[in-house]
Length: 327
Image (cartoon, rainbow, N blue to C red):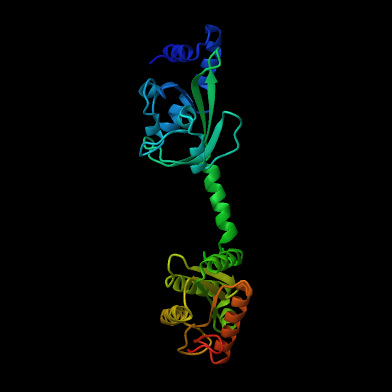
């Protein structure tokens, strides 16, 4: 399919005069990926940048309605199709961006079957009218934002993850705890919390150095994480202390998880120079609350902290429940 034929198709569809050929040629050679559909959703322009992005040539696309195959594994409309079909509301199911009148904008992940990799694309679709003001075609432009999206995800990861252990950091813990408290309040469900502290860690760190201390924390972080359900959260609360959020978990269930964590850390048999034959252990405080308007997530933290203090006071390497609860 020659460039002249492609341009002629566009001029026929839009009623354009030959003096507009330059504008059409410019569209063909733009560095921005562009394709144009006529009112029947047939491709009438598929520029070179679009070929490079999708791995599909204009010769394969011109005159067809199969442009969706370049972006999705299963048939679904592109933004240009939605505009042609008057299905603007469906853009809300995507990731809409600010658009003007008679203009649609959205962004999201596309499968890109021909090139064999997913790409995050920002799309804009605008109508083209003929000289009588009738809709003649729709032009869609694309922008590959994959690198920006991945960089954003990496920054978000840095903002919410502890650099040493890879666990959630304190900020993420605080945000998640308040979100889970709000959900527990709405659904009238229990919310449990474990506070886990490495026994005698300051002395361990002094004896083994910071590198040895860091390795110890990473091994314990892995051990604690291995006991979690998909919707639980383990965070490095600070220093040698970890916190575990257990949504919709009873105190009995939380105590069971705590004992499994304590046992797993003990079974690591991380040696310590503090005393012959001894290994690193943890103490754990557990607490559970039924969220209510007259109490708060901070109270749950305080109860779990108090339980942890009792576990330390009673000799370490044990779990402790709130006063008044069996266990």
